[in-house]
Length: 49
Image 1: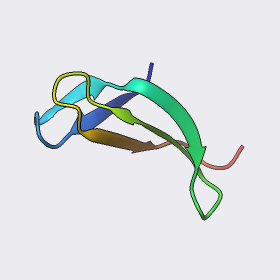
Image 2 (image 1 turned 30 degrees about the vertical axis):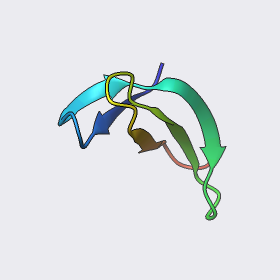
Image 3 (image 1 turned 120 degrees about the vertical axis):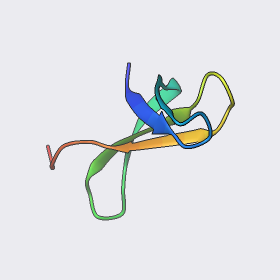
């Protein structure tokens, strides 16, 4: 599971409903929601694959 920082909870959380997306510049990222407050979470992953 991917982990990202939630700005509402001010802590690192495991993403719920995480899915891998590709940004406009071609870099991979993970997108999901915070399991506690429901805020959208986003994490940029390592370089191009």
